[in-house]
Image (cartoon, rainbow, N blue to C red; front, side, top):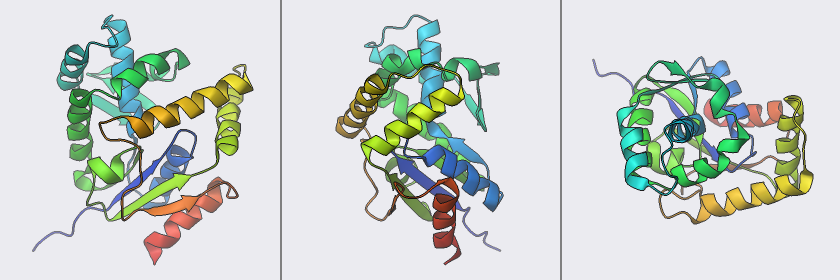
Length: 218
C-alpha cells in the first residue's frame, strides 16, 4: 500500500513576524516536530566565530556547514553532539549570521539537512521554507507585520530576557535585516507564489495560530 505523503507546514516571514512562536504552537496542536531553521544558521555562525573563520571566507563557511550535523529540539541546538543553545541566542552573532546566511554553500548544506528532517512530517519556520526548502509543502504560510509592530515584539523578547533595549537601534537592526534578507541573491525572503499571506498586526499569538489551523482544517 502506498503511504500518504508526510504533512509539511512551511511558515515564513521576516524578523519578529511571529513565525517561530506560531510555528511552535501549530506543531504542538498537530502533534508534529517543530524546527526553527534560523537556529541552524545561528549554529553555523557560532561555530564559525569559535573557529575564527573570517566572515567573508565563503569557502570555509561552506565547508563548515557541510561537515557538521545540526540537531534542533524546541529551543535547544546541538552541532555534532555539542550543545550550542546559549551561544546561538547571543545578539553578538548577528553580524556573522548576516554573512553566513548569504553563502550559497552554507544554504545548500543546511537545506539538505532540513529536507531530511521533513521525511516524517513537520512544521518548519524560516525565510525560505516555502520557496526553497519545501516548495511542494502541503501548506505554506507567510506572516507579515508592520515595522513598528515587529520592533515592539522584538523589544519585548529582549525585555523578557532581562536585556536592555535601545528602541532606535533595534528599529535600525530590524529594517537592515529586512533589507539584507530581501536583497540577497541566494534564497531571498519572499512569499511563495502559492503561500497564504497572513497579516498579524492586529492578531495576537493565539489568534494567528487559530488562523493558520483554520486553513489546515478546511
